[in-house]
Length: 265
Image (cartoon, rainbow, N blue to C red; front, side, top):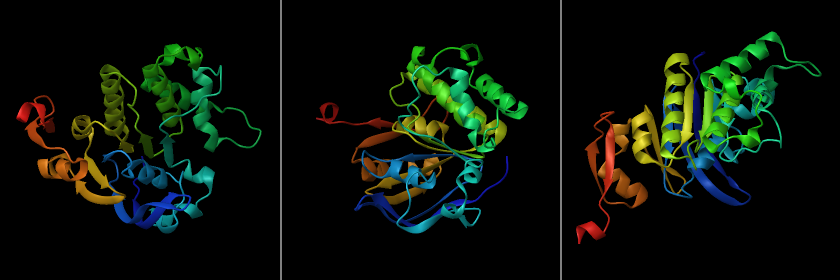
């Protein structure tokens, strides 16, 4: 994977006339897993969508290798940046292999078919996600966890250096959540893919992230390693939650234990 610089410089972004991010500047570490955390409606998904050019900035800019991403042709940008949105929609009846093959769109010429390189990329993505045996199945027949693996395989087939995922573990049971995060960790370590994702579970975020960004009311309130971000003070400030911080006995990363009111009467 190539090395890249990716940063937001004084961006203003939102929906219609509602500003969500106001004068936000932040850098994404190359070759690391970055997790964006924050309460509901804090602006974390807006930040991710803006980085992925799914949402255009109103002021400021997102810079990839010092070039504003708005000036990069879509197909060229799609060779570097991949995105798995929060609620992707698949065409009815499409097979797993055909959906994954759509990740090869940036590399295909007009009216051109799948090249050997395209077919190899699709096969590798299916293997990496452990779903090669599902290639001929309809996406409609799969479980939620299997579908999520297919969507990630499509993003992998795109063969990008940077991958954005908006809440990739939402609606999955804990076993599938761990499976997905383990696969992403392996992808990062083996291929040095820069991964940026939004997660709700703070403990899983701390376990699998190299770098974290905490967002509140559309502002970046803290960035750093999990041990720097997951502190009682930060969790209180960002989420309004009183908690204790202990060490995860498995990963040795910080782990929050909410106090609540019932048990502290």
